[in-house]
Length: 490
Image 1 (cartoon, rainbow, N blue to C red):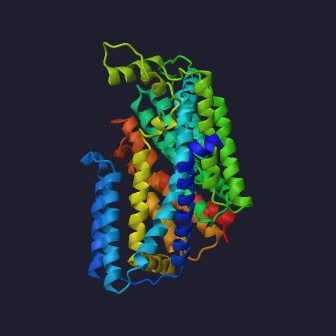
Image 2 (tube, rainbow, N blue to C red):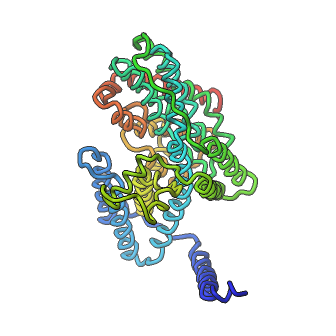
């Protein structure tokens, strides 16, 4: 009772919060009704939204040239587009629909954001616990020939991508390729092409392998187990160009040696927790019909509890060099490492790792989801859906969209298709998942894996080197479509 009296104000705040949240639920329920839509594609407002989106996406494509993170211009574009949408609907005498549609777009993003935040945290923590470094050094220490490394890195990338995201898998195997054959530029270039194809192909037969696959799963048009129907088409997508490129891969012994590095304490437990979290998310979604993000966030909470346990068992979890450098940044080089700063540094803070690379990506998703939602509110996606799926048919439309994803990021493309919600059966939804996920392999700039490897192997793996083998990648793309139609066709 003493504790309750001491926290009486807290109880009042909680009670007030419950009352307010009940009001918010009522408000959202009241607005959750069929909304009126307008075709504003030929209006000045419609042209303005297209112009704003084009300018914003221009800065996204030219991220390396402008040295501006891609999330910044697209977030601004999203805000401007929805202001224009609000003005356009208000001009039609409707002051409610724009707000309702915006809330729907934000809700779509919120679920995706929380899911990705959890998955990225697990992947980054496995990286921080040196799981990937240990795997890399083990591969290097085996002294395989260059051609063996070519096939092992491709195969491991294909198998890792369904669990870890395709970019992380590509960077891990790219590091192996650079370490083993760094003095043979031709080998590095061809091996990187192989890795990019394998990363994108491996990501399509699991919702955890690629953002586009995740979006399709969360939409509910493909169940988790049904993604496995894409395993053989994805394998064909990788193997066909890999076999063609193999003929030009130089052979020879490895060119470097590395000391074996062990995983840090708790790495095995975190791996098991990640697998359990994935299994829990699938069961929650399939058996209880609850959003899979519930399972992911619960797993994230367990991971944080385990991090707290680790900090109590072994408080000095960070390397001494990192600790000393952090303290020098905060208290100067000539002062002792003392005071309350120590408890801050020694804390098992998983989000410190995530914030370095993930927040720009998560904010980019926010901008893309809202931009595409704004274009849909103006009527552009309805017209595009009629043109593609009404005139061309789903087979040609899905195949063409996959090729386009080599030039335009596959995330806005897939979100646009899901927003169009064309009438397609399971086979056709699996086909668009396959084509959008693997079409980016046609160009080095068509996927996050390709862009990441161009930075890692700068000057060796280039746009032109990849373009030289685009014909072989296109052959694999077409054969994989044929394989899917043969195995999974309606």
